[in-house]
Image (cartoon, rainbow, N blue to C red):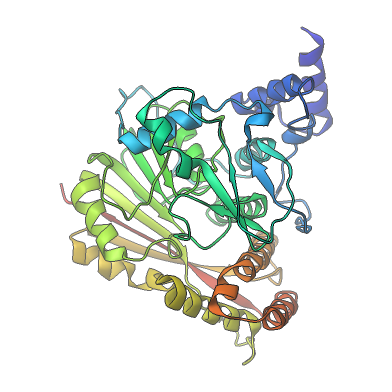
Length: 452
């Protein structure tokens, strides 16, 4: 056993990692990537930091600290780009291939599956390890790229420029492909928000990733609006014999992914180019990404799902509620969400509150066996139950980071003055810290099946 392996085991045990987590493929690959990077121009990640869970359910909640955004996986970091570029090329050329199922019985839909935060912690470390050093904030638009330019004369080389670029505005980083289509950032702070939100939902559902009763050996699963890819990666680990496809406008997913997972840069509302025989279509928090939900559901039903396949939506409804009437008339969280609904509708033509219409909308498209579950997610750490208090603390941090993302661009493009935005954020922060307000947000899960 060489010195590097000894050091890896020592560092892992020192930080209290269970033995099964130490030998996870992604943890090992990230560790040796870190060792290799020590001799490069600058270190990608310090060992053993990637092995420490970022958000542990029994640890104090992290408090995000303001920092300058970072670019992801630039060529100077010596991080392999072949996986991501291959996935991007497949997205543009719409090559999606099925794989032969193997003998495997995943338990991804059971309460006992993927519980806790180990998988999320590995993913968080993986993505953060692919971030480069800080870059200066730009008052003007600054275009940056995550990937090396193509060295061949392929069609993909000529098409990939706008796909791989990002733009810096309002002190944050945004996607360049179809510029302005999605109004929120795709930088490190946004990754932290999405990662924490993913952890929150897994804790809420005791580890479940979905409710749809899909078959035990699915061959193809697609995650529309995949973001940083947490859900797609964990689905790929649970179903190693299936092909998992994640689609998003931004090339922000990690390079080191399971071999059965691929990511495509595309607009999910464009002309449909994906395969027509998926077993499961998953959409989470797409209220701020989809303008025409009815047309998208039409595509899913007629061009995406095979007979007997399932579609599932997961989204928060932007209206706080309370079971004991403790929400005051001037509750800042309610005002904030009412403003968000208005901004997304008037500026970007998104229906943030479409989630309540989903059951009827799916049935109108022809889906059968439509089911609907609603969970009350506490806002803040006011619940007496320890588990719900932890979940509420997660949501509080998610909301504050979401407010920061809204303040950077959407509120400005809506015409709000800086003083107005500052006052709103201040009152929002006070409301989120008030334990006498027992508020919650409804989390909706809606799923349906294409007839056989």
